Structure formats: C-alpha cells, structure tokens
Length: 156
Image (tube, rainbow, N blue to C red; front, side, top):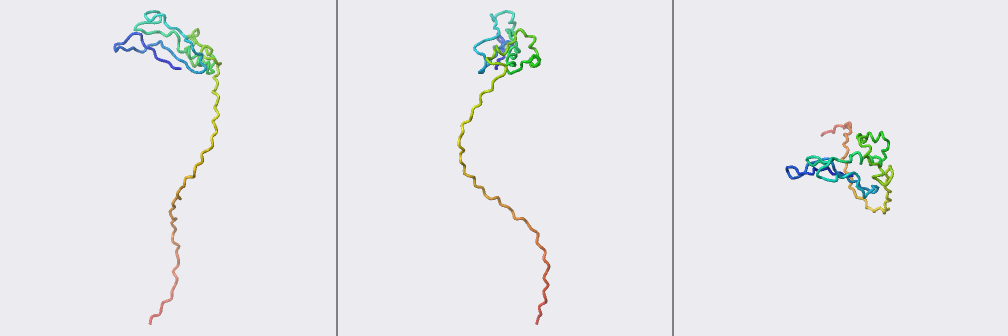
C-alpha cells in the first residue's frame, strides 16, 4: 500500500501548496481486487461541506476504513484484536471496508509456491597449496654434567 500526503487546493505565499488532510492510497498486488475506486470524491472543488479555507479537503474515507480490510486479509478477524489494532475504527463503523471489498481471496494470504532450484554439478577446484608454518625451536635448558676428575700429568 502506498499513500500520498494531501495538498491544499490553493497556493501558499511561495506559489506552492501546503500539506492538507484528504488524500489517496494505492493498494497493489496479485490478490487485490483491482480496477475500482472506493471512497468518495468531492463533486466540486470550489465549495462544499468537505472543503474549507485555505483549500483544505476533509477526507470522506478514514484511514481506518482501508486498514480494517487489510488487517482482515492478514487474518486479524477477532473484533477485540481489530479494535486494538485500529482504535478509531468504531467511530467509522458504517464506513469500514472489509477484506472481500479489497481482495479476491479469503482472510489468510496464500504463501507463494516455492521454486525448486535447478541442480548443477559442482565445479571442481584444485586445492590451494599452503606453505608449511615455520616453527621456532623449543629452547631447552642445558643438562648439568659433573666434571670428570683427571690425574695430574707428571712433569720432567
């Protein structure tokens, strides 16, 4: 679902328009009941009970109306759960859309069919040669030895 914030019908001092209230939403997808415009559009943009100065259009359809049907499509059908998710929905009870107005399927979206990958043969790879890791010699303590006694050599 995508929405666009509304704009006033009259220009502001910078010759642009300011943010307003009434706007529009798009819902797209394979299970959306398409080719329909739901809600109401003012019959005139000059005056009326939905337009006031400075060119602000009051929405005729509440945000909760659309989300009520979307929530139902996602499987939230318990009234208490819907009231918790959309706390203002009871203020618009006669103006709420249901899942059947928005979608062609029931309340549980169907999961897409998984695709089976095409098997491929593994690509042979040569092992990467590795150099041996040099190791430092292990230091050893000298082994103590006892001196060997020697006889004095005679002198002449």
